[in-house]
Length: 301
Ligand SMILES: [Zn+2]
Image 1 (tube, protein in one colour):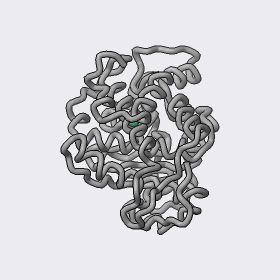
Image 2: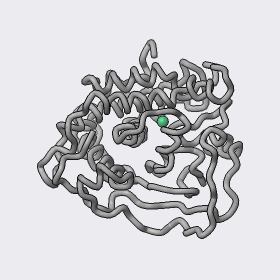
Image 3: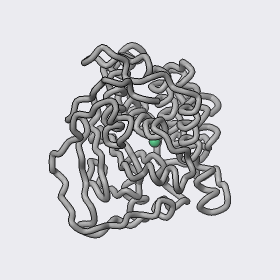
Image 4: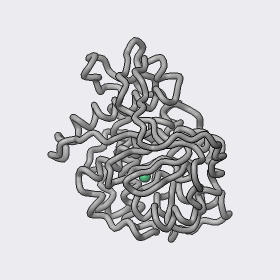
C-alpha cells in the first residue's frame, strides 16, 4: 500500500524516545514477570516462549541519550513515507487517526482520543515500566501510548519469516492502535488478561486488535486526509495484502512456539494461531465492523 504522491504528513505526531545501552538491560524473565502482565505486547507473551531469544536482544551500544527528550519525527512527504520507516510510521499514524476519528464515534458512540506514539530504540521508560526492544512493539494502557521499535521490522522479516513490505509494517502499527481502540471502548478493561490458552481473553484481545487493524486497512484507501482533502493511500494490491497477512501469520503463537521449541502448546497461547490472526485481520478488512471484531464475546475464535 503506497501513500498518494504529492501528499505530505505534518511532523510532531510521533515522538522519538529511548536510547541505547545506558544501565543494565532488563533480563527477559523480568520483562515476563513484571511488564507483560501490564502491557499487551505485539508478540510478547506471558509464558513459555522466551521472546528475547527469538529476537536476539539488543546490541546495546553505549552513547545513550536519556528519556524525557522531546524530539519528534519531522514533516514527511508521501514519497518519503513510501521509502523510509520513520516517515512511513508518521504517515500511517495520521491515516489511523483520521480513520478512527470517524469510525469510532459512528460505531461505538465513543470519541476518539489520539494515543501518544513513541518510536524507540534500545530501551524506553513507559507508564508500564521500562521496556527494551526485546519486547517488540506494544501498547501501554495506563499511558495510552503506542511504542514502536522500528528495528522490529527486520526481526519480522529475518527471524519470524514475514514478507518484507510496507503494509506489513503498517499492520504492526494498526494492530497496536487496535489495542488503543480497545482501551477507549472499555474492552481492554473488561478482559482478564492474566490467562493463556486458545479460549483466553488474552487471545481474544489480540485477535480483536488484528481485526481492528484489518478494518483500518480496508478503509485506508478511502480515508481522506483532513488537511489536504486527498486520500492517504492508494488501493491495496493483492501482493500488499499478502504481505500483511504474512506478517499476521508470522507472529502466530503456533509459528513462534514451533520455531522456538519445535512444539505447539495451545495452553500457552496469548495471541492466537497464525490461521486465526490472518482470519481475524481478513474479517476486519472485508468490511467488518466493531461488532464483527468483538472477539471477546465471540462464541468461536
Ligand atoms: Zn497485541
